[in-house]
Structure formats: C-alpha cells, structure tokens
Image (cartoon, rainbow, N blue to C red; front, top):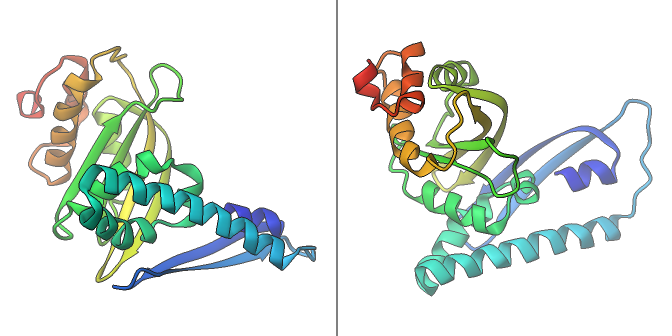
Length: 227
C-alpha cells in the first residue's frame, strides 16, 4: 500500500485482501490523491516494483515455513495465512517475524480464542517492546486494550493493526509498540508468560482491570496474586 501511495502521491488509501482455497490471493487498493493534484506515473514501472516486493517476500516466508514445518505443512500455512497478509504488513515486517505470526494465527480456534506475544524487537532501543494480539473476528477495541495495557505497567506509543482475510473468517493482528514503566532488563523471558496470562485473564473479565495489575511486571507476581 505504501508503495502505491508514494507512486500516486496519495493522501490516503483503502485496501482489502481476499483469499480462497486456491494458491492465489487478491489485494484491492484504492489510492486517493491529494485534492487538486494529478499524479504522473508509469503503470509498468509500478507493476514491476510491486511484483518484485511480493514475490521475494512471500517466497522467503514460504521457505522459512517449509524449513520449520516440512514441505506439506509449510506450503499449507503459506497459502492459507501467508498470502492473506496485507501489503502494509509485508512492507513493515520481516519474513522471519511473519513466520511466527502465521504460526500464532494458525493456532486460533474460534472468535473467543486469542494468541498473545510480548517480545523485544532486535532493532529497537533498550526498553522498547512489542505486544501482539491475534484474534479471529472483531479485534479488541483500542479503548479496551489501552487501559488493560497501561494498568499492567506498559506505556503505549502506537498500534499497528492488520487484517488477514482467510477463508471463512478474518484474523486481526494488533501490534503495539510499548515500554514497561519498570525496566525488565534481561528478565523478559520470565515476565512474558506471567504478562500474557494476566492480559488474557483481564480481557476475559476473570480479573479486575485496575492499577494493581502493574505488579505483575513490577513485583513479578501472578495476576491472581494481585487481584
């Protein structure tokens, strides 16, 4: 989407992805130029650039999935989930990260299920984390997610939402840029499981959503110990 936006000097764009049981996926992008501007563009040049971006990235993702899961399973994951990833996601995420996201999406059972990932990106400054939420059907609204994350001791800088149109159900990926109020240092591995379990319990309404939940990270407690 960003490549098309730049090519047409667009002000904004709308996009959607449709996939079927075949190996093909269709991306529909509508770029809206800035008012009063008539962009100058070369259709063949744009088509060539887009084809190269998608082909190289998708091929690498498929190869990674085959390496991790074997040829049959890897190709199925690539066709069903990898090809449903939108162009904006492809431009922002490496194939290695995408492989982990595809695996998380494939584990979802229904609209009441959720998969969570708290991790430290390789190229970010000290203290910066990412928190991803994978969910079928409607995503968790930002007005619900922000208070939960803040009450658990995270400062939220931004959200990057993506939608995968898989056969029968849309899957939403919500990628939050966050920073813990209390530095975790090298203790992220120990904190990850506590945090993810705590967030899910709060989201399901089994634990009160309040400021005491920040003790999950600050005091290394289980969420039920601070409820």
